[in-house]
Amino acid sequence: MFGNFGFSYVGLLFLLMLFIPNMIWLHGKPQGYTCNKENKILLFFERSGEALTCCCSLVFSDFNIHKWSLWSLWLIAAFMLMILYEVWWVRYFRSKRKLSDFYSSFLGIPLAGATLPVIAFFMLGIYGKVVYMLIAASILGIGHIGIHIQHKNSIDIED
Image 1 (cartoon, rainbow, N blue to C red):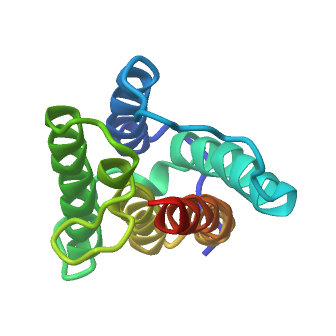
Image 2 (cartoon, helix red, strand yellow):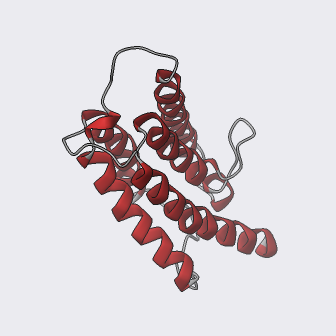
């Protein structure tokens, strides 16, 4: 329920899938992107959730692949969401890199760049039965998705 300490190679893979496109994004931010005027409370939740999610991903061996069972479907679902996240990034990098591209939905999933990884890490927490990851992903979701909602609402007003 609370997790077994040990290195998680699955957690590392998820973090690499998360960080690599974000590092590339640093050199290809959307035209007009700014992080000014972000809600400080949401920013606190986002930063705290990022740190907690990263730590949980690496230090609980419960996320590693176990003997196959129906419970393994949670890991498959989490991994599929991360693949969709990668595909969303490919679509973004091939776009004109406008704010509307960055805050776009994907396959009906609103704000896919923020939503997909948060749900994936939450499902990873379910798969590993690690309550700390569920809490971390929830905190991350409040902050990260909340900030993306604010940003998207501000460009909707400006467009």
